[in-house]
Length: 232
Image 1 (tube, rainbow, N blue to C red):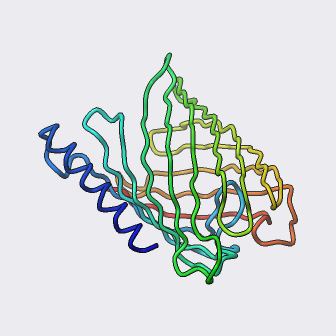
Image 2: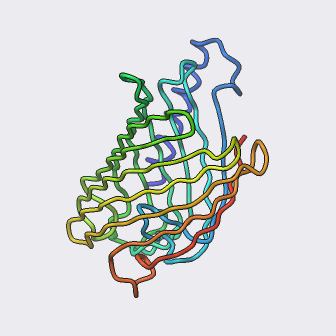
């Protein structure tokens, strides 16, 4: 598994380097980096860390036009497979169609040091349709995995998010989504919160998450999550 991951990351770096050479752009201009942490690792309003704090990081290479990108990433988790660390490699395109911004991405995830025999990797496909008018923004997201990690088989997530920019620093967003899963819990999730740009490179976020699944399970219980991210 590690050999596969290393090869995939190397291939992405070679692709980025080749595209950079073709565009004749300085190497640093096509790369961006971000990292951070929060009091809970929430994905689709469910916790991936059983309610505990986590850290994450990612790098992104983007073509000169901004159309194509490649993203290696990592995050800490507490998975049913026994893994505490997940890495991912994604590639996608960002076209504009009829005034709407699209983001179409394919991603492969690996859970490191999972229990022997556990299903520790998965493919995910994401399609975002976004539109902003003045301070208002909206996003429709569709995600699907044909076979998730652990005992979960295929799942689909559909969510709608709305946002409002109160200033160039303060933004509020709210989202509601539905997740249908084979061999796992189907649920509706929602969240609402604020992000504030402390500086050009540092952003703070406070967000409330909840689901209609078992409230006694920390994976689905409601929580107020605070986080801090750094980008450069």
